Length: 469
Ligand SMILES: Cc1ncc(COP(=O)(O)O)c(C=O)c1O
Image (cartoon, rainbow, N blue to C red):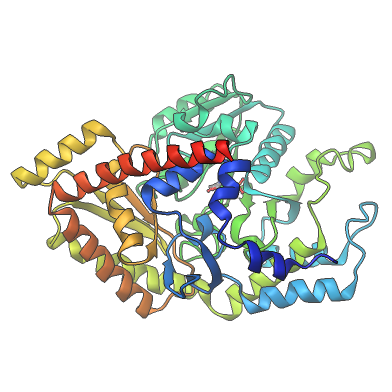
């Protein structure tokens, strides 16, 4: 019988976690089981996921920011079908394909005019690797300065600049000559730049982990310092770009003129991996500087037709559906409505964000009982409180969210940019109720601890069964 994907999906759907436990990452399976995130979603559309019973789940995670235009967008789907129908020559390699030229042209139209050249790759981390190489080639210097708490990906160059010990543990020594400064610390930045060996200052304008950004004068002053000391500015827009923060690029909130920007995630329209580096022509030509260096930096799949077609469709959707504008308007509304809950919930310390990249940070409450429960919980695990919020958001309210990073009392919401007031209303009500549940301390703590223990036991049984069969 010939290969039939639809039949395969129909007959095997539901075996997801068993297959992953056996053949992929059982540790992830265990985490998902413990937290009750082990749902089997069978369909997705726009801002929603659906399970086999037809239950609707509000997706305020967007695949870590891949679905700015919503899931399974019909225009991106059509672009994929059209690409296949056209039987275009793909990855001839020793040619110049039309679609990559068109996507480069379209991307540059959305960017400030000093960015004139594009390099395509397959992911965010690959874009960072390339950006580091471009900065070194252009300046002849080696050091990269990044920010504490930053996240730039997990391949070696990117992991080396990433300022997060949890991701680095067990993988050292690292590759890149790196120094890190605290967000907002201009003096530390200047001291490093004065040594004259800095190729670039690399930062996410709005940090993904924790959704942090500095006071308004930091980035413009940092950029001026970099340029006066001959160092480049690289903005990592992998998560914050493509309208996520209410502007095409997050650096536009500070009127910056970065020398290099990195893009990925939503550039693919949510289907085919796609990343890009945008830079000045002079920097680009320092890399591809001679005929024998014409492919000195490249990737086999980098300009593949499906990725380019998806990119073209994604840019078109963001523009024509006015999703950048919607991100700014809905983001402001969500921020204000969540902030208003602070009057009611002493557990909320701060609501911050730009556009639809929003963090809610919690704090130790003043009430004696709650304070005690908070302290006990933090003694068990520093990241547990945020779990206590996102677990009922999913189990009781069917809203998918995430903790904002390791060891922080912060949850992050990253909805698709298509959301309307309906989704905002639903989320704010669900979040309010989830927090009310937390106030019945220590009830939910015990519940979480008991679930953790039970699930672990079940998980062990499951593994034992798996081995026996
Ligand atoms: C700011 C930033 N840079 C780089 C990356 C790495 O991208 P990828 O996971 O596509 O390698 C991410 C991923 O979350 C990111 O948020």
